Length: 78
Image (spheres, helix red, strand yellow):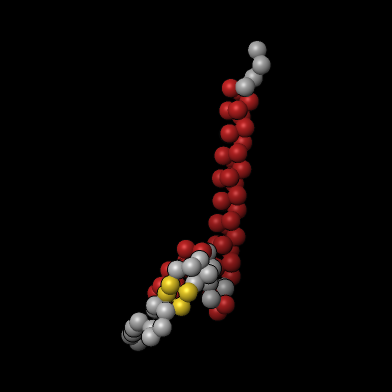
């Protein structure tokens, strides 16, 4: 089956303020935002989203730890 996509007659405004004139624009916004249509919330999608959140949180915590460690070294009293 071939999927045909054509531009919509009216643009819609997405939550981030950008405008979408076709389904690919909406899909691009959803991917960028880490969202999906209700029908796309499979177990695999939920698992990947959770892993991405955990990975991001781990990176942020590590960066904060390194920042505090460097700060403690530079501001250590002699």
